[in-house]
Image (cartoon, rainbow, N blue to C red; front, side, top):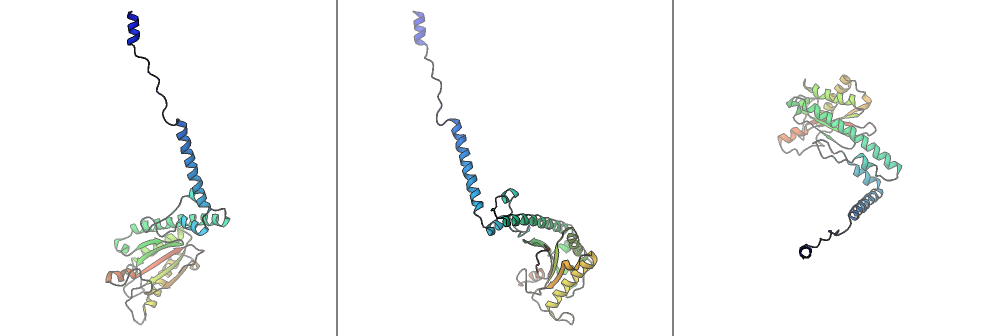
Length: 254
């Protein structure tokens, strides 16, 4: 009788918990299918790009490392180009040029950081697809109203020489002035002054640095290409500058 009561009081065993929802393998399978779908959509989008759009995707050097915005793509992304052999060569060439110009920008910025504070006033560096522009204030290079080099100008010009020796780039020295007219016996206008300053700076680079003359040229722009409006004295000083445009040899640029 006691055994019968024990059997009655004993709770029936609970059923083992069953699996609820989808089986685990189904979630993994769904993730894999989604990833494959994204991959093929991405692959298709690259396959339909034109050469012009692909060139834009590679990015253009508007500047680098804090100077201006830089857009770039990885080497893995560059592999997703069209089947055109010309586009593949173009992508490879642009990628190489970008790396070279970025290293030049870094080199110039490093040199600027080590220069005297007065020489760095008004100086800067920027870049485009074809080259790097190292800009220096005319006041740091020349005596006022003349094309006579100041003694400390050698530090800036020697920096340009070092870059040209380390990298196979061509050089255009570009002289700029503000909008205030000048009229002297030696410099009848800003055209003569800007051209003379560019020529003097180039002569130093060629003669002191041993740079081949066929790699370089000088040009004066007077006040036709101001960096900022000639509204204040400070802005006029910014426009009085000499630019050293170091560019790829195969691309002639004034």
